[in-house]
Length: 290
Image 1: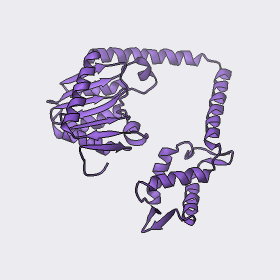
Image 2: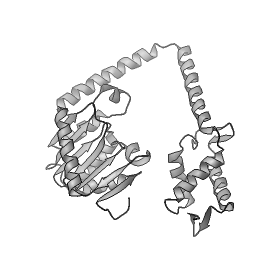
Image 3: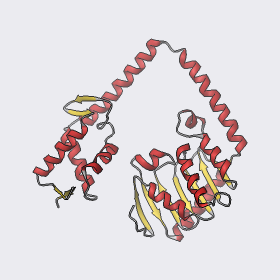
């Protein structure tokens, strides 16, 4: 996001700066609506609220999805909800199983509507998108809508969260016990099938395009936003193409290179685009030639 915030702006990843600004603006009422919440991100929220000294007087409406499957597969941390319960006395925790929206509202002053969950990947590393508004009419309507949605859900107490945690832990234990009974051969077949599926997906990525073409298109896209240094391009390219930029493997599928040498191929793509007159290097930054 830009430093200047208009009444309505597009929100692009990473959006941690916008989220921090929202938490710094909240005074009395905060809404956090997210199907998935991880403890590390909850801790950063609580740390900022405590630093401002408002956690005891803040009305916090937390809307989330408490389906056991989410806790079992690690998408949701029930410990995060316990942390909020322990540190924010005026917490209203609501279980809404149909929740898919990710919405964050500070008083009547700022609202974020995004695809990003309240998790570190959702805020920092996934490709997410949305809007941020400081228009009081829009913010008030968003707040009203989610106060209404909260009424459709079930209020959950601290004791109920602890009971659910105990049940989840028991399920995890039962799952591990059942998993140990699977024969070694079955596990090996599963791993082989999983690897074959991953390779098939990589083959789809390689279909009809070379490594250079994929990376060149990505570089042009990123430079269309603003000039960037190579060191700035690398993490953004990896964010867009995590399969190609996998530092743990080194393979070639249908002429496309996947793995450890991806930065080398980025350099090749940069020089290719430079020779083609599509980008130029000036003062440490790559620029799009328009």
